[in-house]
Image (cartoon, rainbow, N blue to C red):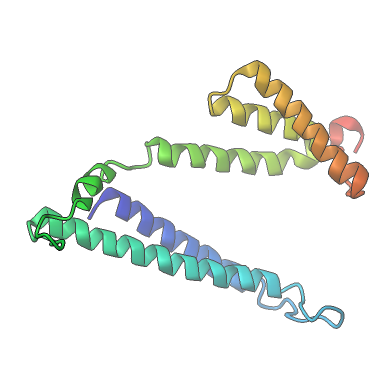
Length: 180
C-alpha cells in the first residue's frame, strides 16, 4: 500500500469520526422551526451528509488508484487498447513519496493551525489586529514579499471591516486590547 493511500485512509477515518461526533452533538437540536421550516439542527446534519458522500467518493478513488498501483507493481499489466502498460503507473510511483513532511501536507497543516490560533485569539486581540496578523503571516509563509504583503493585508482588512462592520452592521470583536 502506498504512503499516500495510508494517509488518505487515516484522513477519511478521522473525518468520518468527526462527522459522527457532530451528529452526536447536534442530535437533540430541533430539525425544523415554525418560521422557515429548517431548524438549527438541519444545517449541521446536511453538512455531515455531504461530508459522508464526499468521503465515500474519496475512499473509492483511493481504493481504485491503489488497485492500479498494485497491479502495476506486481507486473500484471492493465492493458490499454493498444496493449501497452497503463502510463498512470509511472505517475503513481512518484506519489508514493507523499508523507506528513511533504509540502502538500505541511502547508495545509500550518494554515489549519494558523486558523485555529486566529479563531482562539479573535476575542482577545480583536478582529482588525487578529486579521492583519493572520493575513500577513499567511502571505509570508506563502513566500510573498513583505511590503506588498503589508499593503494587501491592511487594505483587505479595511475592506472587510467596512463591508461587515459599516455596511452590514455586524458587531466585530473589538478585543481586550481595544476596550472590547
